[in-house]
View (cartoon, rainbow, N blue to C red):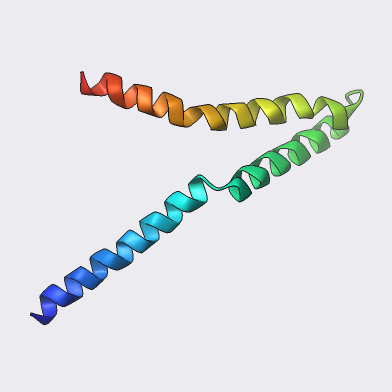
Length: 85
């Protein structure tokens, strides 16, 4: 009986971890960190290669990255639907 209780406890612990990972993946905090860090890296790169208006021009690729990230759930659902057929 102890083995069964231990297995249930292990499953519940794994479920808590999976739920926490899912919450992180869909969180606004994660998205803000991604867009901020992407923008910063791109802008610094633009400064290094001496492009004009690097801080302004970095907005476009950073926003493209955000749009790509936000569209992934839609494409995942579509892919899963097509895969079932």
